[in-house]
Length: 160
Image (cartoon, rainbow, N blue to C red; front, top):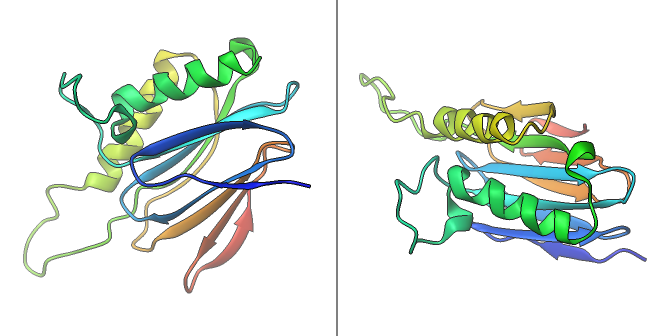
């Protein structure tokens, strides 16, 4: 029987099959799931911002440029092989718009770009991304299968 492990905002968790990792409230944030399909181990991070800007005293799970490395290291400690790691991401929405103003912050886009850059830096293939739009997401990551179930309000549910 699987446990559902909740990943909070600016948090990350790793686990082994048959557990399921879940996070809710992905607006502009990115949910990144990294998986070793042979060992059936993986992890999820709920990333809020692209960069810690060198602030090593900050919550490193909050930022793409620090959280991805933490997540990878914890998955490797569970017995994964770096050569088999694969990733899926969801989130990165533009949740608010201001009439008459360009949305210069575009934090969702910046978060997605930063996570993708970190995956490239660590040579981890990004299998699929469900990012953008203007709606939030809740995700469930099945560590056994590597399936990522994405649920949205008014946009249905899908498994990638």
